[in-house]
Length: 125
Length: 199
Image (cartoon, rainbow over all chains, first blue to last red; front, side, top):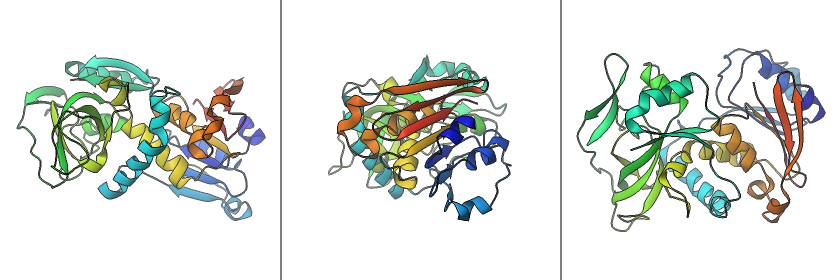
């Protein structure tokens, strides 16, 4: 929270939620957009509603999964247009934690359950 | 074909199932070479997440592989390498998916590298660019920067993808600050600043 106070965010993406969310939300910059994706740390937090109008903030919920196929197709077309050149120039790459054979899917699930992965766990078919 | 089904005991079982069939005019059939895990797969296995209508019962929200069948005048042809966002069914030898949810595998990428692209990069792209409208010079915060999504957000919030492309070369980590809670870091001297947080 101290780091955020020193660097008020304009855009925040939050898959975590939980009690800390409200404290982080309070550090947003004027006209900030807070995008909530999930609540891995729990669904409840305390937010001072006054902050919304004082700082002209927007609190937004967003999910990819519940969008229509047409909308997903538009998102993916933009992704290919804007991000593929960076992949192909190897400016950055997806972060793969481990590749396992599909028959070891249970073991792969256990890696996610234990929270061991930093990046994606992939199954080779 | 075979698919990794969730059995009665909520265990994963590699079973024989019917081959998937293309229904719509824009469906393509893929031979899956690799699929990637998502947290929803664990929820589905525990019985807390049902795949949407029209998708297989076995898990798998993204995959990469080779096109086996495609519509005659479509974007893809048999033999093309693609990665795809799925409603489910990636843990299998084959899957059928609308062509709009497929993307060509980036040149030089193996299937195992590309399989994990669709979910996290589409989520990062959607929210940073389309929903959040992150602009050059703005500060971006990702809560939980150590997961697949966090890493993709750090990559995509760098200057080229939210505004001017040329500033990529000058992009580098600016400062790493440690705290008792974990780490936080600030990136990118020329464009937007990214702060990520490890819980």
